[in-house]
Image (cartoon, rainbow, N blue to C red):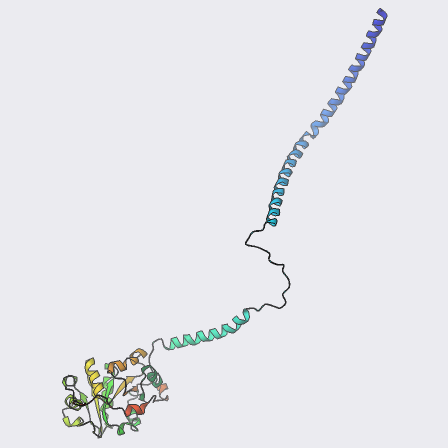
Length: 325
């Protein structure tokens, strides 16, 4: 029995020694593997970080893709594809052609308007045509006098085709106080031989009665009562003028008592608005004419008569006689 036990112990010791050697070999292999793992441990940490970053980028990309897919499936209302684009059958008309045609025409129109505004910037009346247009009155004559003092005789001779044949009273007034002396020069011209003239006293004219002939005889202020017309049927033309400042009422009364009124206007001194007021200042619509003086040298050859001048020279006053029915 002891021998058996001894053999059994020996066998157990041999197995234990074998197990110990095997364990030592395993331990050596483990140490070798651990030494290898310690070398790649740093690389593993780096790779793990990169993996996390890539995972986050992947998730963000998936979210953007999901949003784009949703937008594609449900497009916004302000943009909607009605039909697919296709080549046009014919070219569309361009607005450049219209612009190319309108721009030159518009430029010309603007230039003409600017030129008109520039020419009328002061609205001065310089020619007989302008005076007749803006005053709506006939221009019976035009001259460079008094710029050229020697042209007064020529101006008055130009009126001889109508003036000598006229009867009644012709009142000559200036368009302003500055032209009153010019009206007096025209009325006092020596060529009016046989056709008496005088100056109207506005105070006597305002105080005269309703008898027109008596009113003029009382108003003539030349000291010679015979110079005034004795009746409306007098064969000669009576020429009167107003001297000095007169009230507006006296001017209108003198204009209404006369058969015709000749207004002396200086070229370039009055604007269009002043000429448009001539009818209102004189208180009558018919029997008014304009004598345009002071033309510039370059306007001396323009047409000197404009409008119905015959109707002016043949005009008669329409105020009834005193005591007439």
